[in-house]
Image 1 (tube, rainbow, N blue to C red):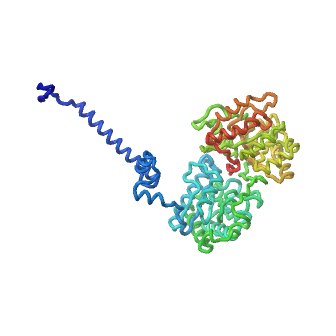
Image 2: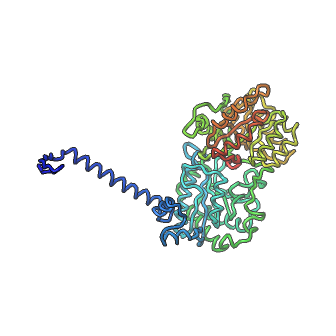
Length: 544
């Protein structure tokens, strides 16, 4: 194509060639990219609008650029002056707590997991209740996440539900179902528990084990979720997961159980009305919501008894967290050992991705460090677990009492701290190493110990079973270093940096309380860990 162009008073003929095919393709691609980028921007704004819940992201951007805090436009002004409030509760609301979940499977038998069964029934119950017009709150949103007991209670209490129902399954030599309530239950809690239990029995069970109070340890203790929720609450053990007939009935009657519980809850609500209208002593005969695990008397744990302990392997393992870590900086060995020994109530790391640290200190001998350690912990408002031996408990009664009174957990580190390890002893002597100290502390301090640390980290499958049958949880560690040699203490700044570099979610830190290095850097470690976004959490909240 030709055309005439005039330049500087002169005319010239210009020949213009046709655009090539590649030219047009590049043009189309450029326009497609621009249109796509525009569409993506619109979608991003819509997403942000939805998150901000006001539909005026553009105005917010304009205000930020102009430096003005005043909203632009009548619609935004009206929305921003509105006060968001929780939706008003209308009618019956129930909080359902499917026990365990995620890396905490609960009981298991031949590949069948308690957490799976609890979740299935929880969903069936939710469906049935919502069909009946009942509002339902679940304490966990899926079956892949572990929710700590403390958080279950927090969810339940924040929901302002009328009733709390926790779903579980048993394991052991028995069979049949049982339903639990607190030892100090008031009339409303008793009404709910009996109605729910009787409805389930009517739906069909192998054996009615009855309504029970307290825990298997006796009426002097209660299940954490029952004693800390602020509404009538009960916990149901739906048969034994290692009993074939209980499993058959559980699977066959799941919908019937859901319907029976729903009807029982409706009947209870029709009689009692809203929980907020009930006097406190109708729920519990003492102040509701006060934790039974307040640190002053310890706890009693009950786990399914492991039979024939003597036949289990007594091969001795020397625990160490290893050097390989995952994407969260957690030692990978801790995760694999958690899974390997999940049936033996043992913690090598707390399975969470939350930035929580659990501080533990071993006390075998007193070198004058403990007063400063306790002072630092009090100043920083941190609660720790102190694992003590019997000689230490006998020689340092004032420190033992101070640990308890200031809200720390007193842990069991054996009677004699055998250098060859607990597994080097007979089953009877292993039990004595645990219960000898337990009974001494109970008699002299009215405190039930429930956490155990193996001396030198030496353990076996058999020794884990012994601890389980003693009602103890075994606590290992996901961080430790060579801090215990009082004659060769490590450099303080290097040690502090090592502690910070190894931070990871769910960390169980082991520090020896005879170390002056630990004593001198403890406060700095707490401050720097908090600056990194970590919380020093209570170990008791991890214990099922």
